[in-house]
Image 1: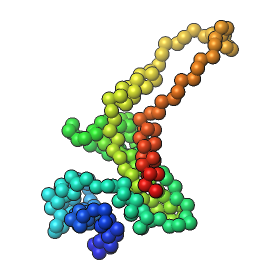
Image 2: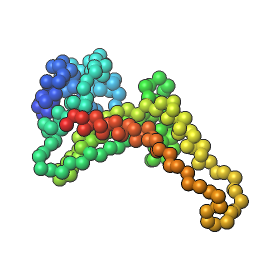
Image 3: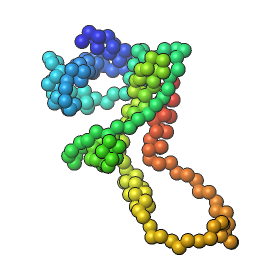
Image 4: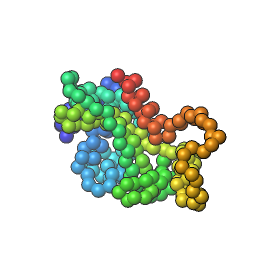
Length: 203
């Protein structure tokens, strides 16, 4: 527990002492607990000072997570002279129910099909020599109605079409050049671009 207190000291300026104390209890519970991570499970494993209401207060507190990730990286991970990489990854956690924010069907490569759950996209900085990584920005993937419609249209376009009669090889006579249309970024690329721009703005 004392090691967790020492690691969390760098968070003291941006957040209050109460929030930092709650964070220490939740970190302790997260490290020792087993099974699925829930708010009730965190409260049961947090010990004295980590009631269910404490976990609820911490989760409802608005924190500058981008700044906190940057402070932790500069304090505990960053080493001048080493090569670091910025990598990104997305993860899907299965979740039942209908009222959870961002709940949707996302494709999971392990299952090979879309499953109901929550999706998160994370950007991390990796120290190549030390083989250590620290998340710098984490965002929940919440698909808009336009993104859902585009996904459905893309799936419909992949449906097998009726075979067309074969034509002669080569370019048809009378065909002209068509102007290239500007490429629109997919919602995934737009999300990655926004996260990278926010990270570069913190430098």
